[in-house]
Length: 290
Image (cartoon, rainbow, N blue to C red):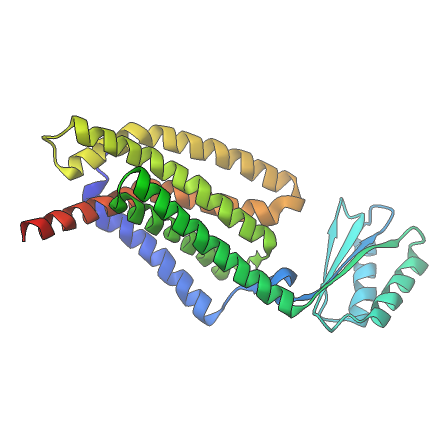
C-alpha cells in the first residue's frame, strides 16, 4: 500500500472535514451543556416505570412552570431528568413541579437538584483548554526526546487534527459538549499518540536497516508493517466502546467523543502523521543542500 504518494488525497479529505467544521463553529457554534453555560439540573425518581402517556403527563407539568426546560427519562423511564437555564427554574417553580408530580405519582421524590453558575462554566472551559495545551506540549517534548523533533511536530499536528475533527462533528451535528467530553478528548490524545508512536518507532528502525531506500519508501514500508496491528487494535477498541455506548446510555457523553476521536486517531496515525514527517524530512534536506 503506497500511502506517501497519495499524501495530497489524505490531506484534502482531512482539510475538507475540518473546514466544514470550522465554518460550523464560526456560524453555528457548539451545543454547550449545563457544565459550561450554567443552569439547573434536576433528577426526579418516579418509583415506577412510566409509559408514554405518563411521561407526557409529567412533561406537561414541568413545561407549565418552565417552557424552556429540557425533559428526558433515564433508568428505563423510572427517572425524569430536567435541564433548565440558570435563572428560569426557580425554587418556587421546582417546589410546585415536585408537588404536582407527587399528587399524580405518590412514589415520586426529588432525587437531586444542582445549580451551576455561568462563572463555573467559564472556569471549566479555561481549564479544559489549558489541560489540552499542556498535554500537547508534554507529548511534543516526549516524542521529540524519544525520537527527533520532526517526529514530535508531525505527531502534535496529527493530534490537533484529531481534536479538530471531533470538534467539527460535534458542531455540525449539535452534540452536547459537557465535562465527560473533555475527559474523553484527553483520553483520545493519549490513545492517538500511542498509535502514532508505533508507526514512528518502526520508521526509526527502518532508517537504520534501509539506508539505500528513499524516505518515501521507508515510510511506506514502515506503515505497511504496522498498519494491520494499528487497524486491529483500533477496530476492536471501537467495537467495545460502541457496544457499551449503545447498551449503557449513562456513559454516552463519554463514549461518543471516544468513538469519533479513536477513529480519527487511527486515520491520522497512518495517513497524516507519517506523510507529515516525510514532508518535514524532505524540507530539511533541501535546506541543507542550499
